Length: 230
Ligand code: MN
Image (cartoon, rainbow, N blue to C red; front, side, top):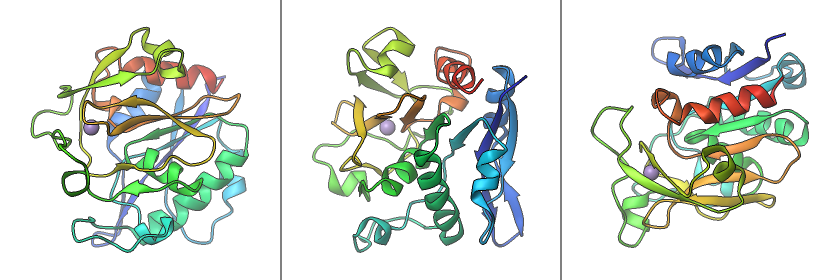
């Protein structure tokens, strides 16, 4: 049986449409999984949703409301999405309490960290000392900065080396990692790019977008995740 992978999505309020880049569903299909898109909804039985899937991806998107990690919004804090925050923070807490593989990508890393009690850097350019550029302006398949990986980490085991080249489309990042979360990858400016969740299950979060870099080694993140979801 192919593992069923739930993928969080966004709701476009102006168009009344649900929306998800197809790179996520393609990455799951390419690696032998069956993707299903999870619409953000108020008042839905989330335990039932989680019972229908074998693994879950928390995807990219707008900023998490800083009030959810106990901070007032700074001037450069970006747009927030109340529906997604409500749906995903609750879903993340339930998923983290469960036994299924979890893969957090970009906002997904941030969502999972906040759901578990961590905090975020609201805006890298104004809050990090000597930051590099994390909002690249070239094609998404192209890696624009390095990430150094912790030896003996899960992510190091997946790539088999200490440094990878990643794309970068974020102005926020993990500040304090949540209890049970551990940083295992960093950009050259010290920004956290990988969080691993202490668990017997595959629980990895990356700050970049591997779904857009699938022709290279980044597909290994998806193959390991789908394999763990079997
Ligand atoms: Mn980056």
